[in-house]
Image 1: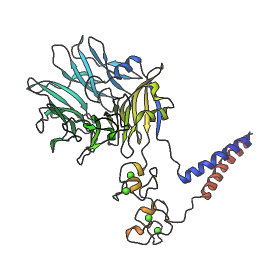
Image 2: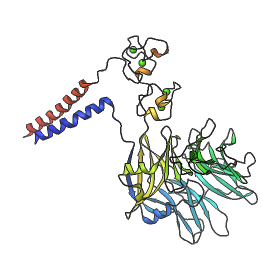
Image 3: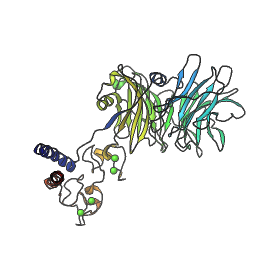
Image 4: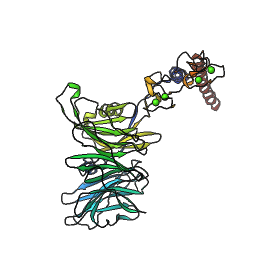
Length: 480
Ligand SMILES: [Ca+2]
Ligand SMILES: [Ca+2]
Ligand SMILES: [Ca+2]
Ligand SMILES: [Ca+2]
């Protein structure tokens, strides 16, 4: 028995040692089921049908609470669900056939905002929490008759949405407990404006303005007011901002004309876009020439990941660096199931330790609906879309420190501008001014001195593993 154990340790140890020395790649993502979901909750949250935005049916950041609304036919009831508490109905202002729809939930799940309305009455913005229950957010200012709240900042300080006037077009607003309502006006010939999202600290508001027949995305800050963000090249404007990262990158969609690189007849395409904080517009592309529709549903706070829908019922995943990809094949690969067997609803990007994860609800074949989570591995430095070492060169193949796209460093020892081993030689190229280091046979080598990692390291590891095993064996024998 002992001999068999020893043999299995040896066969395991050698590949492990080699892997440690040569840095084998890891899997890209990690799939798990977080909870089973009641069928009626799944039915209520799978369909984002209330507003033309991606901010409904959200999880708290920890994935514990999920908001949605039951459509009872005569009325609509807002709820929050968690596995521990089940369904908690949020209520409404008047009971009976009044409706309530939640629109956002704080990262800790403690606060929910939304709208409550009934026939013959105006909408009221509500705020709900465990302690105070269902409350009016605030009375609307003079000249307005109702407020539609769309998003709550992560710090809980700021609500954004739009105000409806007694006469005249809707107007985007920002609301804080300290300063009350702040109508945000309009821009560049727009009549109506709508705020759809807000940064974590409440300082950046995004949305869109309309001027018949067009629509254009905006970014608002106290310093600059509303700034029009533009659209992809085409005759008319139809862009909408849906998410804003804390750095000011805005995500949404724009409209352009697409000919599928000559493979289809020209048609109008709705494309997911990024408006970088520094200006301009970036088409996030498409994973297939034939899906001319991609609309973001959620973006990471740091702007590095976006998920969204495509018109064929599939989804896209965009990551800074790797770019646009088809989500379903990734889901299939990581879940070990066929995404085609799922009714799959990715809802949200959340933080997951040092990585990011996609949270969604779904139902596979006749199984019970579940809450699923796909943790995304942070991309290696050589394919993360960032100039990690500030040398003006980005990722593989641009940065010479990158051996390939999976390489973990842009500034290995032989490309970091320093004489790491004090032998007078710097890097593979002399670091621009000095003498090259003789041991830097490639720029991506992470050692300026002679390599000691080789068979020696594996042998050392084997000895350690063997020693550990041998000690355990001797302890076991001693106990007899
Ligand atoms: Ca990089
Ligand atoms: Ca670089
Ligand atoms: Ca160096
Ligand atoms: Ca050196």
